[in-house]
Length: 251
Image 1 (cartoon, rainbow, N blue to C red):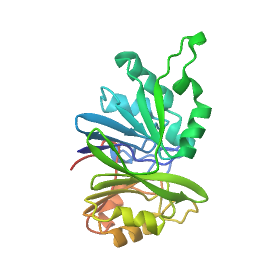
Image 2: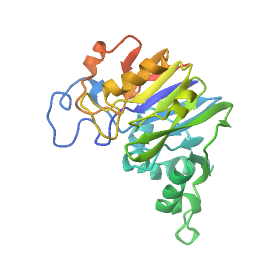
Image 3: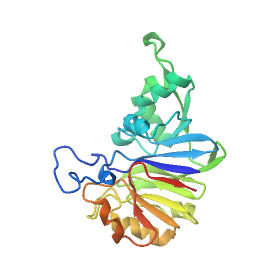
């Protein structure tokens, strides 16, 4: 299995428009952060987690030849508003892409992007994606995937476990029942927005508290704001790193 960090940034991206702080003006390419997303390669197939606002840029940067399935964590704009960019893959391969998410997520996405899932023959649109609601573990391309229910402030989100790796973005708390699904990880990728507290996201210390409880072999902190300079990653505990766009991990 290979996991690539397509985007490691928060909803504004980094640099943030109009800002000239040290991080936004940084020349370190690891401080240039597109909106949060990952690509999981398993069994020769490619699974995209979230269709971020920067999907086209990410797909071009990583030379992604096709997408075989999509998992959605929730319906906030920075995580789904790149969904239209999947049209290019359909034009090339003429294959409808399966899309998975919680029942609430799939209902809202299908309502907002009906032409993606239903097509509009009168306008020349064919269905591009097929929706599937998931709440229990399922298998995809030989990879066991476990949905992880989480809280994003008052909003419900879904993390995913892929074998011994887990991706938990946009979360401020994880129920004990979900923590039990996250034992024995080789890789944890987790929301760690910034140093200062936030009502809807783990900050650095909140993410590290989860790390201390789960004890994964390796942790990557993602969904980062311009409050975090990549060079400061050296101050993190052993086994914990700051994610950056294009970072790839083989498992």
